[in-house]
Image (cartoon, rainbow, N blue to C red):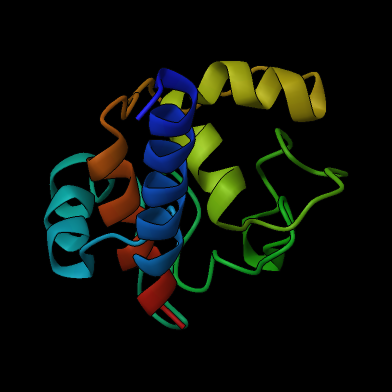
Length: 133
């Protein structure tokens, strides 16, 4: 088989497997809960109708308008932001919160810098956040 055909076959096989596996953000929610407890729970709650902590309550964050939590009005960083938190937004945010905030709102993040550079851990954390509804 010539190199070009082999490469095309390999790419087709890779794409087929990637699509068959579901979302690029398919993570393990149970592992994500552990990550949440280790990295996020210090500043965030994640309980329905729960109180905010230093940071906003993250219950229902997936699908929520950014900066749109009425009970967390003291925070101005994302007020006026024009997007809804989805898997892609959360993934980009978790890589580098300061860079993300600057990009979407022009503001600096007051969040402690807890970067999650590991794609698998981000997928797990996002899978956990998706269960909170």
